Amino acid sequence: MKRKTTVLERLAREEISRNIKYYMTLNKKITLQQLAELTGIPKSTLGNYTRKANSPTPEAVEKIARALEVDPEDIDPRLVNIEEAKQVVQNSQKLFDLEKENFRTNLKFLMKEKKITEREIAKMTGYTIGAISHWLTGLTTPPAEAATNISKALNIPVSTLLSKHSENLKMTILDAIPDDITEEDAKKIILFIKDKKYL
Image (cartoon, rainbow, N blue to C red):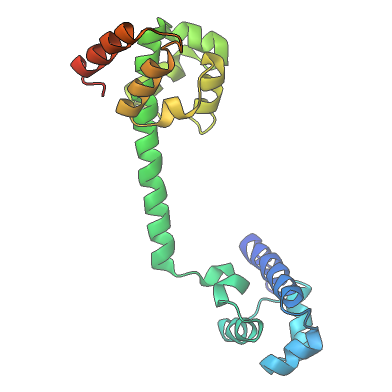
């Protein structure tokens, strides 16, 4: 009985087929026959790879990659170093956690500065009051598009919500200073900011 192809295997075959074709074109438009001669893999077998009929073994991927002068993972993404992949995921999670904390802190600050309530933000963005309340207390994680939607509603750059709080304070205050301010008033503002440890 023929084994059923899993979704992951089907996607892998599609990616491998795409990669082989791409690097064959990139590498002086090498033909399937020439690739067969370089790798020692029958042309019909290579044809099965490019037609997504089969997945090459790691040994076959090594031969194809060597012939096309690329890394094996450039042909088969499943061959990426597992430890490296784990590190990427962990670093991404750390970055996400940091942005989430910045988002919570900065949104609280902006709401206070602009005297905006959770209800008003909910009305402007379409999110529920409960959802916004949970984001502010850290009970739940806001969806990826929340920062973009709220920044548009408040007419501010999205970076204002995701940057470090100290950077955000400086940016918010300094951006609010008019260009035609007098030198005397500018000094007063700078002293005020320093006194509040914003700079």
